[in-house]
Image (tube, rainbow, N blue to C red; front, side, top):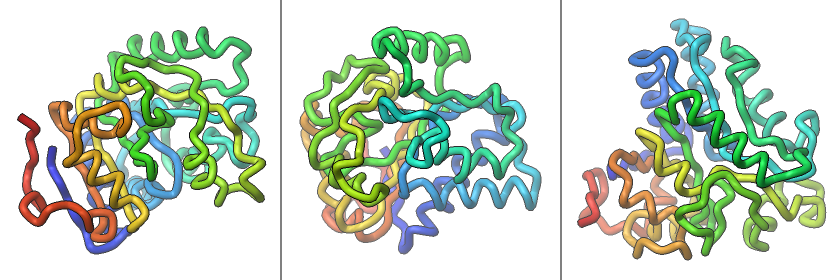
Length: 253
């Protein structure tokens, strides 16, 4: 586990974009796992800029998003389909047929989870997975106590997550209560992982992910056992990390 601490949100996005761009340059047909929310937006903006200025080519790239709200159609402005289109896909040359997100409108979520897993496997698995982290240390929409062995599945959102996401809605009552999410097992099978976090409100979650016990109560803590993780955070999000591990690699024994 590598810890990269930046002095701003924008530089956090730059560091992440450099890693993603390097992955695409080295393997043009990379399979990327992508995240939504405000945290990765600066990364997407930087990647789009690199595409426009120096021709970073996404034409052979395949993407799989982590999650989607259940009951929300792709054309809803609050859907993650819409978010990805507006914040990233329409700014690069990715092929629409190479873009995958879970179907929040599926009638059978168990079948949808199985379908999504088969699609990921058919593409050879995820080369690089980008993650954000919730204030309760969730990754994807894997809330505390979700089994580490879970693959893509239906989840009930914690109240803390609902309140955090309510900033994107008119009120908390409008936030969907359920989502379909890539599972912990699926995330851990990615070849490389980037975990992004910014802001003081993420400091406890980052500490649990990097320094806490590996437990389903802090889903991101499982990343301590992954073979290749880069944790990229701003100073505020890193504020609770011990000075001894700032800027160095951390390997859990």
